[in-house]
Amino acid sequence: MKKYTNEPACSVDYAFRRIGGKYKGRILWYLHAKNVMRYGELRKTLTDITPKMLTQTLRELETDELIGRKVYHEVPPKVEYRLTEIGRELIPFIAHLKEWGDKQIQKIKDKN
Image (cartoon, rainbow, N blue to C red; front, side, top):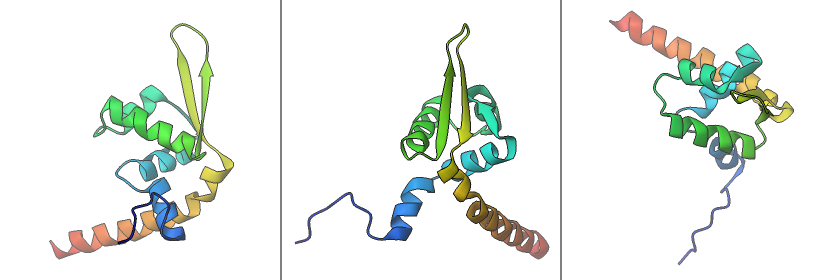
């Protein structure tokens, strides 16, 4: 019987663990488009995410070194997020996925 491990099965598994899910790709794309975004801006942009899920997703992206977080010690607190160099490497692939998605959405619209 094979023991369960948390290690990725292959490179594709590794990559999708880092950017998979409902929000990670979108966060990376929005940070690419804006360069720097504050937590509140991300919250307004991602209207279908709860604050808890946004915080968790941002922490995961930061742990994976795809985004950087800068805290300004002032009142009220200010936190900014931006892509790291590793995160910027993903943008051409996310752009390609976006183009593919645009084509598929257009096909669906054309059928209706």
